[in-house]
Length: 503
Image (cartoon, rainbow, N blue to C red; front, side, top):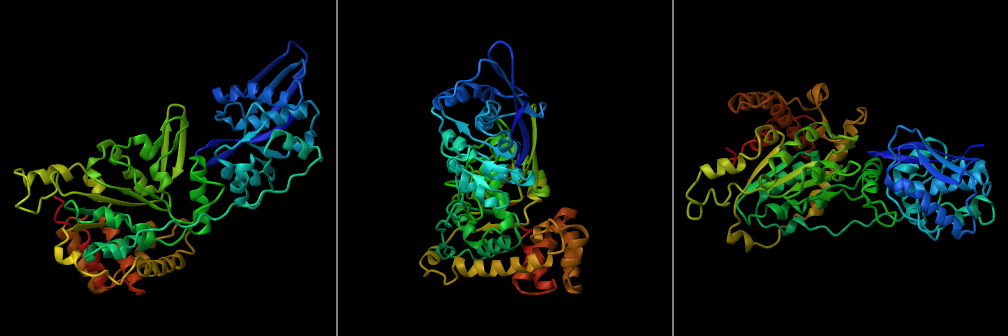
C-alpha cells in the first residue's frame, strides 16, 4: 500500500501542492527518489536515512521508491526532507498513514534528526489552507506560517517530536504568530534645509505612488531627501503586508517569523546586475523590484546603472508585474513599487555653475542624462531640479514641518483614494488609475482643461505623459482635500513635467 504525505514546490510566490508517495516493494534494497528532483532533493535520502537511524529506526531491506507528483513539475530545495521522512515512516507503519495524508510538511533534516528552518513557510501555509490541510514545519518557521490563521501549524524542533505528536505520545500545541516587527527609526524631513519644491514633490509622490526623479548638483540633498521617503508613507494594509511578506519569505528576509507593516525601501548599488534588479539566478529568485513591492525602490546615480538594467524597468513600471523568463523556469512576481531616482545633471555635476563646470558644457549634460532613454524618462511623473543649498539656507533653524506632519497629509490623501477605488479591484492609488476610471476621477474643470490642452500641444506630450499629468493633478487635489481637479492643481502638475536639466 502506498503511504502519502504532502509538501509544496515554489513557482514564484505561488506554492504548488506536491504529493509525496512512498512504496515498499520486494527486491534488492534501494532508496530511489523520482519525480524531477534536483540535486538537493536527491540527496534527501541520505539525510532521511541518517535521521531515522538516530531514532533507532532502520530502513527495511526492501526497495523504497519515493515519487514526487506531479512528476513534470521541477522539485527544488531541501524542504522536501521532512515530507519524505514522514512518508517513509508511514509506509513503515511507525506513524498512522491517515495522519500524514492530511499534512503539508516542509523542512530540512540534519543528520541527528533536528529540523532546520527553510524559506517559504508563509506561501506554504496559504497552500495548505487552500488544500484544507494542516502544516508541519520547523519550529523557527512556525511563527511565520501561523500568520495565515486559516491553518493549524505544528512546529516541532526534531523529527522525534514530530513522530511522538502523530503517535499521540506528546501532542504539540499549534504555533502562534510571531511579533509584528517594530518600525525602524526613520530619518526626519525636518533635517532638510531649504529645497521646499523638492520636499513638496516628495509629498505628492508619497500620496499618489508617483515615480520621482531628482536632478541636481552633488551635495544638493537628493539622496538625503530620498532617504526620508519611508517616514512619509503610511503602514502597509493587511493585504499589502501579506503580499510583501510572501516575497520576503521566499527571499529568506523574514526574521524570527515576524511580519513588518513598514513599507520596504530598497536602494541597490548602481553596479547591480540585471538579475539582481529584475530577478533571476538559480531558481529565478525575486529581484529588487519585487522586494520593493508596495514600497520604494531608490536608484541613486541613475545614469550610472547599465543601460540594459534601466530598460528592463520599463515594462514593470507599467504593469506592476515582472516575468522572469529563463531556460528552465518562467516565473511571475508582483512589483508594484514607487521608483525614486537621483542623478547629477552631467558627469562633472556642475552643469549650471559656469565657474565649476567642465569645458564640454552643455554637451556633457546631454550625453550623461541621455543614458536615460526617452521611454523611461516619460514614466517619471515628477521631475524636479534640486539646486545647490546656499549657506543662508544651512544657517536656518529646523523647519517646523516634520515627517510626521507631512505623513498625516499623505495618509489622509491615501484614505481618500482608498475610498474612491473601493469598488474597483486592483486599484489602490491614483497611479494605478487608467482608461475610463482615470477620466472619471481626474477630469479637470474648464480652466484646468484649457491649460492642460495647451501644455500637451506646446510640449508634445505623449498619451502616457498626458495621463500621468492627470494622475498627478488628481493627487494634488486630494492633498488639497478637493473633490474636483482645478486649474491650480493642473498647473502645479505641469510644472513637475518640465525640468531644465533634461535635454
